[in-house]
Image 1: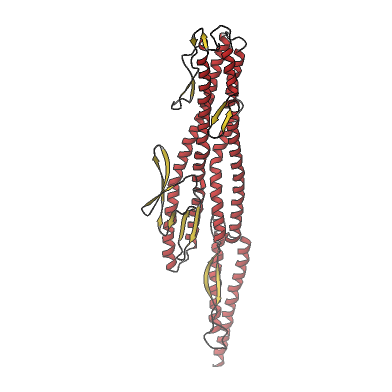
Image 2: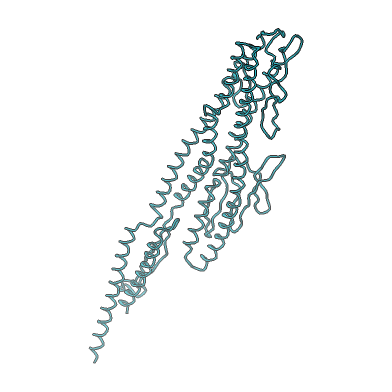
Length: 456
């Protein structure tokens, strides 16, 4: 009977292997599916030295997964999420601010060109009016770009807030799968499909924040932020939310009743990318634009106040700077008329002494928080240049992150993805194994029948 038993165990093992091959082939196009296999083990003999053994058994169902490659894929996904999320904002800002006809520099140049033109005939009403017109045009351009940064700030904050429900849902899903995997695994059932679902959720989370993942002996997975704050431990999941303190948004993580204050510029992924863009690019850019408008308008107004429109009549302000205005930072004084421009230094008609000093303001220094002391004429160029450098660096890092992510995916696929050629070979091999064992059973039956006939 040992011949039949050995063959039967071989046929059953081959059948189990064929089932595994069919599962792999069926899921060859399933995203995130990890291929499986069987571990065949010989059954040791228990009938003395003359028995070769008791056949074969399935030692274990194998899941072809490399935790190192999975970790690399998740890290690459965090970098990719961080860089890809902010590039559209940078590209839009760079395109608008560097445009020849919509930039702040273009508006400033036209304003000072109008002042230079007025120097030909300081008493000319059309030339004076042209100065006011160009001042208004420059104000509108500054306001337009500043409003763009304000719109982007609102959009980026909304986008960050939109990420949190999806992130919290994924974390809760990982925790639930942890519990299910422990329960199913303890009953001796294959958990490969559940682990695949969990790893898909971890991959999604890794694009939103940078994570560290630890696989535990009980089959569960612990997920944390790079800084160590827990996101998932066993069947418990953290929740993240934004709270407003003194008008500023702060990111809070709550786990098991404990709340952690997070630096949202350093959490990585899409959430960290947006936080870093807001704090280190967008807000400093807003400050620079406001500083250009405020200091330039203050210099022009001060110089006009120092001049005279007629003997003993001081000049009036040309600009109104109001950072709290809903319509924009800068505006031309609505009551100002062409005759109110104090181009004269002593009130004498035709004198352009004060006008020359107004023209010289273009070459005077102003102080920007992000750049230090710069000439007014160069301020916008340097701000745009810094923005362009930031954008180009992010584009370069995005390209690198995309390549690394693709390589990480390819490495993961080389171990875990289904290879149809390999499965086709396995299919033939296990089919032949099954048929050979059934042939052995047939031979054993014939031998048994022949033995019975000897006693007839």
